[in-house]
Length: 134
Ligand code: ZN
Image 1 (cartoon, protein in one colour):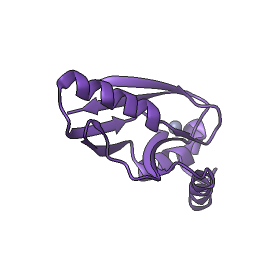
Image 2 (tube, rainbow, N blue to C red; image 1 turned 180 degrees about the horizontal axis):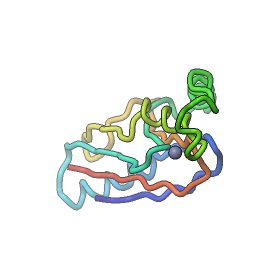
Image 3 (cartoon, protein in one colour; image 1 turned 90 degrees about the horizontal axis):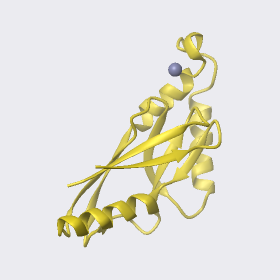
Image 4 (tube, helix red, strand yellow; image 1 turned 45 degrees about the vertical axis):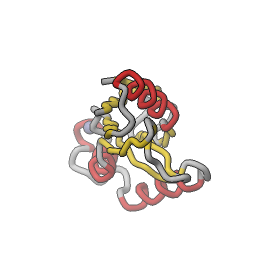
């Protein structure tokens, strides 16, 4: 099991972590002398999430965050009375804390335009990303 630590910079932010995960997968698969497997990427956080989407044109991630902000507005949730981040919890729950990617030829089997995105909904914070290859 490996871990990546990401320090996010904004309240809401998308961070492309594909290269960091790819590096771990290549190292782990070489060490295990395996070519095929499964990579699980997971965030142990309640206000951050992981998704896979286009990593080339940054407007895709901007649109994704804008759509979530529109669907899940700030300031109308019961949990806001506790620590003011009800919307962040709802967004994180909908997007989910993990992604699973097949490994082929010792590398992540991602489409040309796909990247692994860490979604920050209540930053800036330090986020831990767990990577497991089997
Ligand atoms: Zn909270």
